[in-house]
Length: 193
Image 1 (spheres, rainbow, N blue to C red):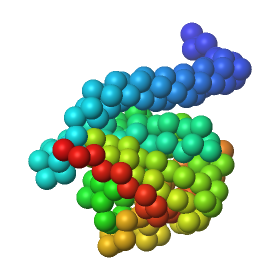
Image 2: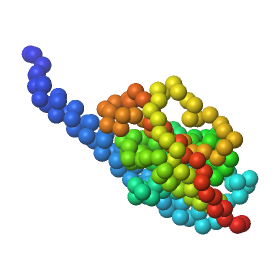
Image 3: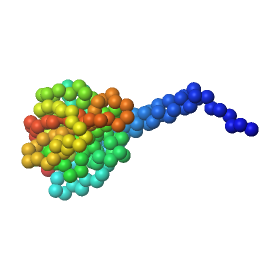
Image 4: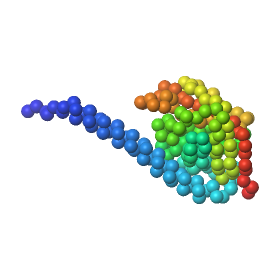
């Protein structure tokens, strides 16, 4: 007996269903991750945190990132592994914390949380709110770089912010470039402990 032949159309339909379910999973995980992060942030941001006494663990919600002109509010996780980036933008471990002198680096997926960056422009305000206070950054510029260009990740003595995502925004598969937003600290309102 010969094995039954599976028609090409069934293989294509099964492949399409698989791809659609993976995309749906990513969207659901990002939405649920942001909902949980919002609850965690509301609970922890009510208590001012001393930067010297606070222990930050991978997966903790460390900030609320807002871009008022783009009507965007996102919760930032500590860490840049897949698990954190599925939940929301991730703060690069070892980079400066929001409001500190140094380079704050936050990465996010272009097809979920950081898709909004395609609309960002010079002069836009980016607000990072933490338990320590509210820190307003002003966008200086954007650039498209190769993945090997890590200049946006280097430490700095100036209080700057880099948002990094893959590029182009509508690329299918692993994107060949990176989109980088650079912003400078314009205003800082630290909470009194």
